[in-house]
Length: 398
Image (cartoon, rainbow, N blue to C red; front, side, top):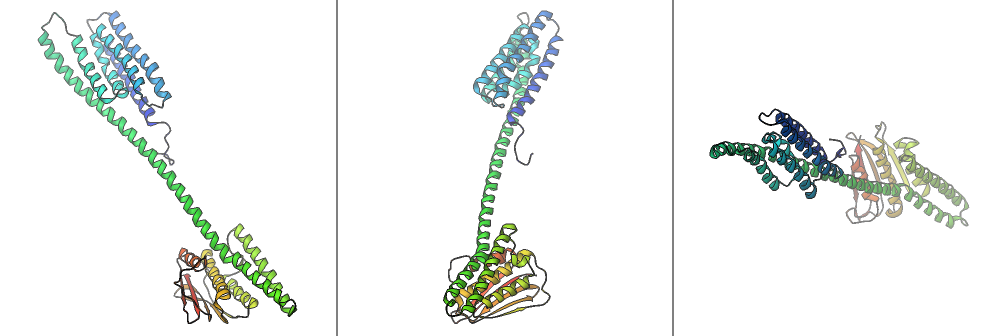
């Protein structure tokens, strides 16, 4: 079956071709048997043969052509018209030569294909017994003829019905399979649509976290620096110039982040160096832009992590320092990047006011970091309280 579950042509049209081939071969066999009949004049045999061929021509014109046009779909009008012509020619041939009954299998196949089952059964009964009744002669004992004709008709009718029901069941199964294939194709399309929507939503959420952890924090720093510059222009020009330089540097880094997100969605801080260098620069920036005392300890021999894991740790450091700067009212901050039990651990501690980590909040901060950590097989924990101090720990597999 093709991967897209589509059929080259409708099932009904494929079955139609099979039964038409059976009809043709059975008709040819009946015509050959008819010509071998003894006791019939050549003209009668030729006339009966012509009628049987005419029945096939009738079917081809009034049955085959409409069926092909409708992709093999049998309508009541087409079926009745085609079978009426076939039966008329068949019974006409029987009147000329009773041996035309040899062509009855060809007729039966089309009867079961073109008519509803109940009507087809009635037609098969007629096809089974009419040839025997036509062959009755006045000269012989009628009861003796009936004793032979009726059992033969019963046997033939039984076999014909068995064959016809088998044909009908095959056609029914093919139709059911076609329906199932259509449903499966529709289900696959629905699954593909839902998967696309889920992927789009996940990508949208990821980009929202990415923007929150990079550009939004950078712009927040720029706003804070500009506000500091405004207050220092008249009173402390040297500090204002220093903050102006920091503003320009932060803006350039934000621009680099934006370009990096567009190009490959890999943080420019990691593209320009190692994870340790990137974390150290975050600590140095916080110390330069604020009055906080910032310490940064990085263990030697850190393993090379997948880019996704390094991004998680860097974004966690950025978010933790951003939250400390905005909300903690701390005086000291300590960053530790170390190896614990084969995992790489980032710890960010401050001596600020603390908060309740279980309290419902808004935004993408802790929720985004926790989601990032889980995506790479890591874990995020936060220890804080109203008594003060907060520690954020992120571990990822080494």
